[in-house]
Length: 543
Image (cartoon, rainbow, N blue to C red):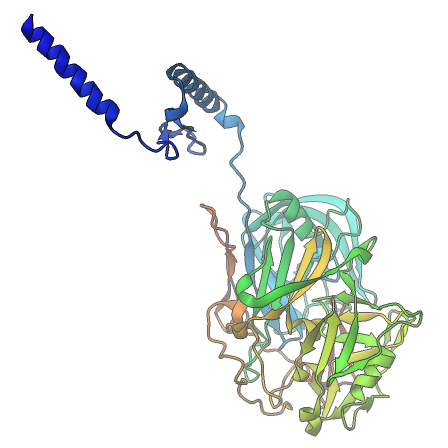
């Protein structure tokens, strides 16, 4: 009996000591996690955490039962649940064609994939490719074969794409198309047969086999645009795509195609620009295929140039990667060339652009160093055009330069800004809300040549080219988005920058080093096409 009493007293003492000990701080509860359960399909991971310190034991048991029931239900219906979507961005390296004349991107079409290089064109919406290509300009072109694709389907709808001063025609079909690893099924594709007589055609010495329209859909039901279909079928990190056009620095390179920048779908490559993006509303896009935005003004050597329309409103500017040059209101362009000694309108060059006369300016190449500093103002922010970009080409004698800024006598003072301007910015195209954005290029993306290395097409009559300026770096990287060389057998890689597992890049394509030339024919890209000017002697290729 005494032993039992002693035992009880000891127990009470122990309980008193325990109760006297400080309790754990209530602000730091201990979280107990139920083990994660991975089900048989390997796609779904279930784990439910509960703070069991603040739960009645009966509630704890009830919650454990509910968690188990939910886990069992998820396992039962796992096959009905699609894999979770990851917000992503896809990158594809671009190809610089004919020393800044145009830019193309490798795409894959069909099953199994067939690689075709197509012109990058934000001035139209249709994707079209050659199904056959005959003639001297087709040496490097690999046509798409619908018969070799198990996923191809023809719908018999006639295809006709007009570019204002020419066009292509054929029939529509649908197939699987991928760019930089971004896959779209059921993409509408125009099928074109090239015979050498089309006004829009292949270019000698290049691999260009079609055109990719990245313009604004003309209506909500327009399903032709690849980017619109991509945004609908895949989960973009943000509703926009970005484009960086890299200059060709190695002007002595005999290859007509080198690496030329980057296209990013679903978000932007922040390594290619610095500072904020200036977005300009593209609400004027309603009913149009163009990315068009208001132009605030122009500045020449610090002096403001009047760019207002005849009715006092701001002019609209179309942003078009498929055009080499820049076109502006006749009055404003004349004021710009007034700053260049010896500049005058070339009376031998007459060209009608969409019903309006154009002014093409020439000036002595000895005055290259006197080219003005031109800034175009969007959203209240000035964006500079590197002066040598204002030169399109040289004459056969090498003494006369042709300007890449062309005046146009349009009734609404229309502006069209092609690669002459776009090489100087990182451009962004946003669908919601509709806008075009510009940002300053990052230091290692702002590749520049010197004023002694200017030549748009090149050839035996070109002047000697200097070394890249101190602001540029040698094109030796394997990353085309930063101006890497892609000559010879090097490949224009397409990369998927998503961090999601299981993603893979698009098959790379070797860039042709063919060098067929045709003397005495000039090339000018307008609205996704080549216009031949026989009066401008430039050693280049055939449209």
